[in-house]
Image 1 (spheres, one colour):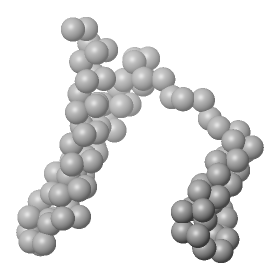
Image 2 (cartoon, rainbow, N blue to C red):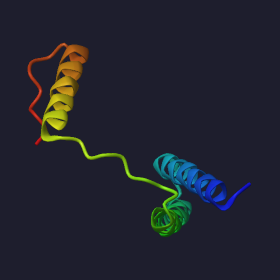
Image 3 (cartoon, rainbow, N blue to C red):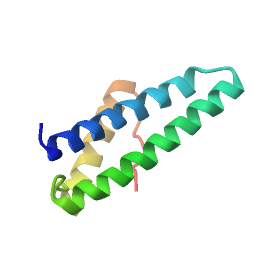
Length: 96
């Protein structure tokens, strides 16, 4: 396994950990345990960002092209339509 694959694999693992910690925080009623999960999540986020910056610098991670304003507005309109249809309610305010 080359360095690029290892870095991307670790990034994927950190992302999975962050998601898991977030779920555990939401389901935890013990305040001390909840704080521990928050600390673990925060540390994983810091590690993920540090490794992401290294991967980006080395060219291992290339950011997706930015959406145009049209793409953003089109997506917002579709989301509003989907939410409105699902809820069967009146119009949902446009997200700005």
